Length: 173
Image 1 (cartoon, rainbow, N blue to C red):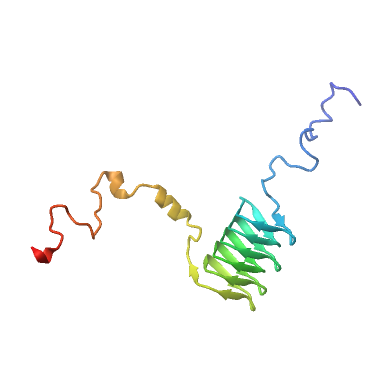
Image 2: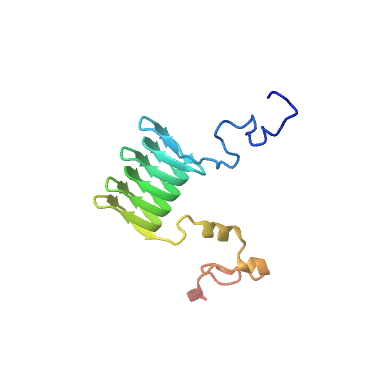
């Protein structure tokens, strides 16, 4: 029973370093970060996971998924894969999927791939459909050099530039 040499009973047991019920393959931030109703934040929030906001935030929010509760107030830009708004947002929303519940009050522009609004939702601003609302492709394109630079081609010249040997005013010559 207490024999150190008998390992047959311990093969299926979890190592002592793992907390009870914890999995080796548990994903980071598998549960949402919940910001309660009595919490007021001034500053930006950034996470790779999900945020459920019931308090107030004055600043930008970047997350994988954001849920704005009925009593929540946000003043700033929200940038996420998925945004659900039940409370008040003043600022730009940018996401692949945006849902405005009947209790939502949004004052600001929306850039989305998919947008749904329930009856009663308030929205004032401009709405723009974009297949890539998070700008992932644009960011990749900006990090790559332009094709002319890659091939050693000529450098483009702006249309309003003046050559040093040309007269300043063509009508006077």
